[in-house]
Length: 366
Image 1 (cartoon, rainbow, N blue to C red):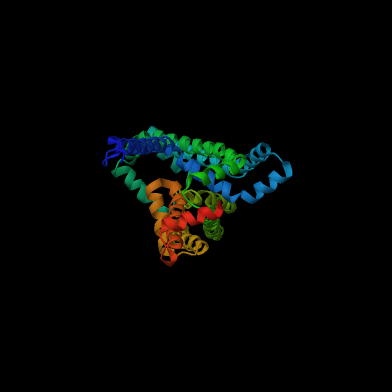
Image 2: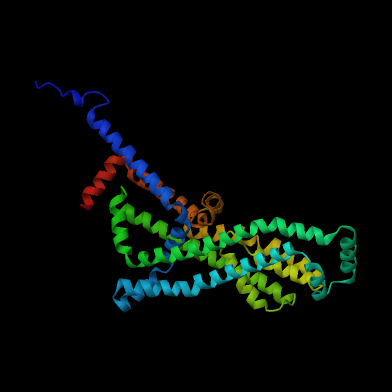
């Protein structure tokens, strides 16, 4: 009998050591790639969601133009014109107003000018006179402004980062439009699933993303409708514009509708309508800002045929883990997990092992 090769004996044979080194090198390379992509995960997540949500109109555009590049370019221009540009302008305007207010407080001397413009109710005016005389209100406001001025730079930098993420999202979206088929083909060869399993997983992920997009739009519309109705009832000027602004900020998890109805309530207080301001604060806090926590998981879970509880935790946990992009990544992670569990369940039905079923499926497909 031929003598066994020494390199093939034992757990630490040459082949196994090389295989272990290859596996560790692969894991290290994947981790480094993850760190590289980590700052851009929100942009990529939004781009994927936009590509899935606009797949049908983009396919129609491709059939008309018969050019992937031209259809992708026009699709990106439409998305930018309808969503990204208005959102960027709104964010820039809000940040500029906040920074200007902080600088005004920092400079001091704004209280007399403010009181000359705003007409307060007599009771509130007397209270303010007392506070200004006994508490040195002007100095206190100046100190507050100086403390907030240190955060103004961070706020401005954050807005620049957000706009940059939107630009990167458009860049990624262009290639998702143009190279969608190539990307799906490459991804199909990377996942250890049969064709049927891969199609099932892809359908589940696509349904999840569509449910998230449709749920977000529906919840934002309901919040804008509730807020706009109250703006109109309270006689807020340009209530329709404020309702549109509420719809836009409702789509951004880090902002929320308070960014709109909060300043409107302050405006009502400064104009002497403090009763209306209290009503708006109560309506905004109890109805407008909380309806999304109840309605969104119900809409997304209903589309995915999942109970509201796991959907609710997937959304909140995803936001806590990934930030705003967790609104998409959380439910997608849940959908992928359920899809993988379905794969294991289908492969082991009838007492077969998962390896045997997977091999048989691949042989049939080949």
